[in-house]
Length: 243
Image 1 (cartoon, rainbow, N blue to C red):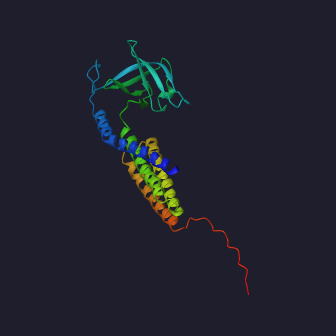
Image 2 (tube, helix red, strand yellow; image 1 turned 120 degrees about the horizontal axis):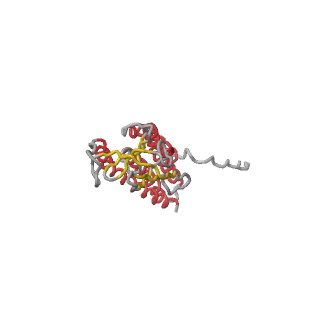
Image 3 (cartoon, one colour; image 1 turned 60 degrees about the vertical axis):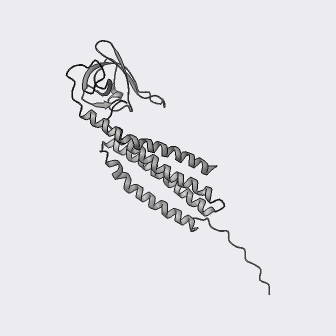
């Protein structure tokens, strides 16, 4: 049952990784379009590919800390009184400082507020912001595919090697190193986002670390197959000498 569970989890991870990999190109294209979008000559009356900066007044802001299913959100109001609801992927650096009646600038693109700027010039993307999405998708692809492949191999292997404890131990080494591969990809993505590194930094950092983990995986799996990871055998009792 444990092996079957690992196979199911691995298949889900592979599906998520494949979907993320498929979205990388689209996310890159959307980010390129946003960065190259011209400024609107007037306030757009419908969703448009140009960029318009509009002043809003903050009516309310909720950090929603501790609410696992709720994103930070704010209600912004146009000078006309029309409210706009926006959510944020995180609270820093602008959303956490929002106060009612504060003036902010919302960047509107394709009919949505994709970025908010405060009076001090700090900027923060909303959940609809296009920047940073390629990195998220790439990190998800690396994590899902690497963990999924290792988990699938480590889950299927014992099913074909029942009654062979060394093979079961080797499969276990493969599975847990797969967890390391996926976890390292997530940590790399976190470091990239925290430091604002470019997209290429994700594979550049994760690649060498992944090679080290794969080398460790191979060494431990071979050690398990050779019996080097077996527990100490029970000492044999001395046989009585018969003359």
